[in-house]
Image 1 (cartoon, helix red, strand yellow):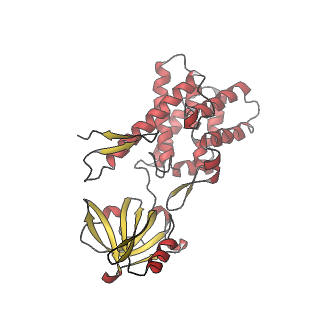
Image 2 (tube, one colour):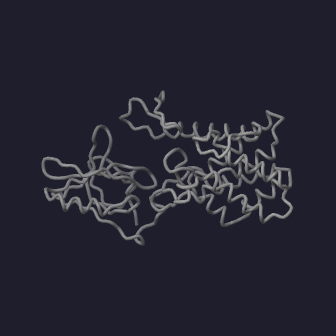
Image 3 (cartoon, one colour):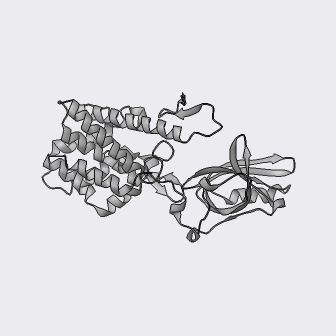
Amino acid sequence: MKDTYVEDITEGKDIEDSFAVRDKESLREYTKGYFFKLKIGDKTGDITLVYWGGSDKEEVQSLYDSLTISDVIEIKGGVSRYHGDLQIFINKEHFHGLTKLDDDSYDVEDYLKRSKKDPDEMFDLLLEYADKIEEEHCREIVDSFLKDDEFVDSLKKSPYSKNYGYNYLGGLLEHTLNDVVLSCHVADNYPDIDKDLLLTAAILHDFGKVKEYIMTTSIELTTESRLIGHTVMCERLIKERLDELPGFPEELALKISHIILSHHGDYEWGSARSPRMEEAVALHHIDLLDVRLSGFIQAKEELSEKDEEMIYVSKEGVQRPIFTR
């Protein structure tokens, strides 16, 4: 059983527990031999681990090569502070050690971050918004997903992304709900928008993400996602459901497909089409607003004590400073 989490780690105390490997830095030389760094973590956060090896390069390299991202390792080490940040150090001279654990010897959910919001409560609220859809066919396609217990279970657990915002269990549901709430406000303010169509698309638009990630102790992209992308995956998923609904209006099906395929707005952002309907333009900007703002807020929450000025990475990969009060 895991007893100590990253949030519990304090300077000056030895630590003996298990953590997931998030990232690796290549082997380097120092005065007494060779060392490497790992980023390790659990559901409460991440921390740097430095393994100080001896002069036998082959031995240290072999240990380094045996570790892959998402492995869970049992460590015994000390905790110090470097440039203001806590880090774990392992040194054989101090009777420290590092061992890779078997897959059946730990609980995966100990190592994945999760939404601070309750998934059942979020889903119940999503159902309330779905009840606002009056057009029978729109409601039919939405219900085909929201009344599917297996899909709902995946929805509640899925992340929205690997790195950029909502990158935790329940992140997809949290983002979807935010888009749906914003869509209601936008539709109420712009009478030319078909509110039922916009709400339908807001609920459905990222459902392809339930197939986008493999979740072990980390979040990794599936091969399908790397080669096709979640917008096309989502449109295909919806098309499969539509084929099971006899009498579904063809034009409505095309409109839903268009909004899904164009919700990223620009081709370089993964859109198969540029937005060509009011509802498509609306969802694109609603989606972008939520992703940008939530990412900004999440970055502020993850501010390190040593940071004088936070750096926020936008959707385009541009680094921007954040003013902190």
